[in-house]
Image 1 (tube, helix red, strand yellow):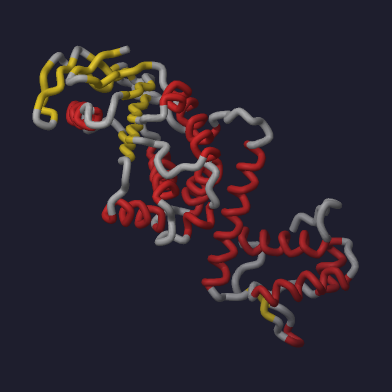
Image 2 (tube, rainbow, N blue to C red):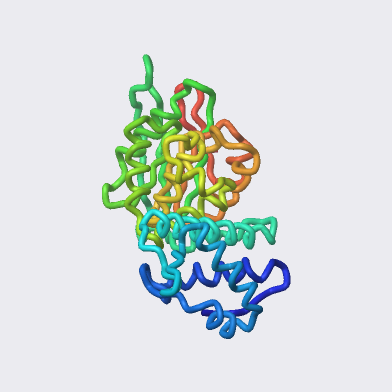
Length: 304
């Protein structure tokens, strides 16, 4: 164990963290014997009373079991061990987001694993008239490049969703796509939570870190059923990033988000190196994270 102590917190709390870390790393396995107070105090070069306090607190948590003359052992209770693992992941996520907040500008670390598609063009839209409500929507020749950040703007009912559906139908199925709808239905929510439950520890840590950097508490995400619509979409985005998508489509991405979450998402999408298709009524948001505009108005699509 690494017995280094700082002066910003009580030593017994730092001892507790060291022992939890040793359990997580397997240095103190479940059911394994814990060295005596005297042995540990000598290793850490601390007062035995301080070590005793730390071990007693860990017994109260259930991580350690007092064994009388046979000494203490690490619990074999999987629920307690799993809770400790989850807490460690949440602490790591919070530490990462606090470090990220040292600079006000988002530094794009979330997206370093994503790369633009090797295809220079992800979709080509030929001039056409497509059904839209009771009328038609006239399309010019358009394309989606592998690094284009495209905003789709227009009044309600103009045909933005129709245009988006048309683009989806033209995409090659081999393109890695992350498609986040305006509202997740019960089936989509269940699918997201099921995938979250199946994540490895490393994947879960990465996902919770992204969620934290988008200004949500990772522990709320773990609650599942009580997760808000905005947090569900953040979770869907975070899990989807594990697939390193070449294109992200988001319909009204700022729905259900507070100001801080909107700003965090804006900075994250602006730094994303792949292609984006965003439908939103938030013009300031679109201006910050897109570089091309498709305007839908009066039954016509124009590139502004």
